[in-house]
Length: 289
Image 1: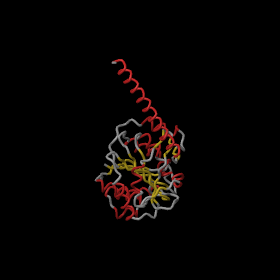
Image 2: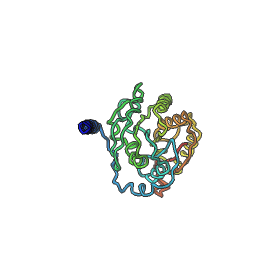
Image 3: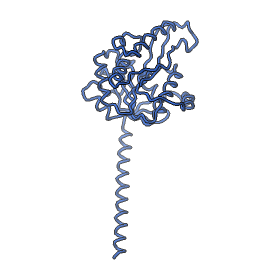
Image 4: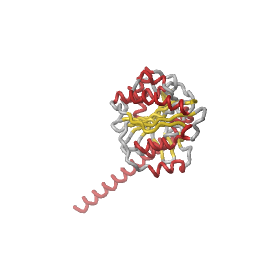
């Protein structure tokens, strides 16, 4: 009798194991098919060697930042590497990445993407729950095509994958016509999707079409505006996307992270040792706590 009960027990365990294996196979298959059918964008336009120094030097002690300003012009890749090395954090679970919509593409003023991003160092998945909340009142729409050509997003994603390997992404691009009121609405909306380990990054370049010395003077004003959270002056600064900068500062003010640390400020004229250059692009990097 005891032997029969023992045999029945093992049969039950065996059947349960089979059912569990079948269930797991179904779940994994559905997950695979969902990912296979999901839209993907490329963020792997540079060869692996381009990031070699960054990966080798990405071991210094970092700070716990809540907001970051980085260039997206890869001529300034050294500056990008330095800021990401400063703020890298394995605990970051969500990165909100905002940049200008350079081509003024798409229908809405504010656009996001639900795509998976393919970088040299692995995939970055979208935070669909956060994106769903952003879409609720039509302030933000999902439009995929503009992201295929938007370097303010795809140039930065490999650095995000290396520096925040566990993070999901909420990419957002803003058209130049986004005014202060709409920017404030977006900033408020972003506070509603923020997790304890969310990091907001803006991908912007500053002065354009100026000589190195003039660009440096313009940047002094921009740095002062950023440091003081002077919202009345943001839209008059020499920056490629005033709305992006406005959203960043408004969000950080609402969240209580209003201490700015400047890391670097230079421009393409100085970086190329060509102070007589007629037209430059300038760069400011820093972080907020």
